[in-house]
Length: 355
Image (tube, rainbow, N blue to C red; front, side, top):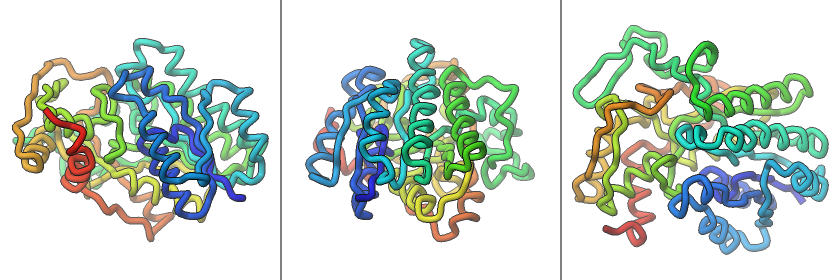
């Protein structure tokens, strides 16, 4: 038996990874204790997604309702499957830089210590298994806000003469900047994943995502930007814009494109790799532009409110470069852009999200 061990299996990327690797013929062992329900309330709960996985995958999915902070419980799972573990996909996290300020100990224990627990168990029980970690572009802190940006009618854009005009690369420094509490805990996890790769010669990959999205997102205000935007539009909720005139730019990558990148690394793993992964120049939008797309899809006017103060450490402009990953895995391609992503989110939730 070959096992794909997936943490955060009820979340957006975790659930898509579970389905994807099950289709490849692996038995999926999911670890998820619905901490998102604790973080974000009913809107954020992933219990519904776990139920869908159990229904869809049947005997191909084995669920463990445990906390990644619980070392003893994790060790039992790893010991049970041992060398049958063919890949570890670690997506479980506290994902909001706003929420982290409420409980810094919880944020750090989940993001940093939980990742260390996963790495050490992989080293002890399945050292040959590729270890894939979903990091974040927040490890770069607010350094992207120092880039030379030009204000346009609906967005900010980078000066066309800048070296990052095609997207921010992994050579951007993560030092001497404001990260947010969340960003700092993810930096610790990010660097520890790299270290286990280099120090123990493990096949680790850090995926620094921008906006990771798709129809399986449990859309909540503090996390799940595009899904929450589409939900607000469809339900007639007021969407609060935090600073930058609503012209801040995000690249967006569909969960299917993320997990296809996971498969590429799984099939040809490397040691201690770091990849920016996102929509890049192919798939990006400002908030204002995303509002217009959502209105066109649903036919419903967007209700918005404006707060002058931007979120601490928030990016004014983020378009990442996938060039490094594409160099290593030239067969991988993006298949979704922002309009296609929002259309799919709308269609998947049209019977649930109503005014």
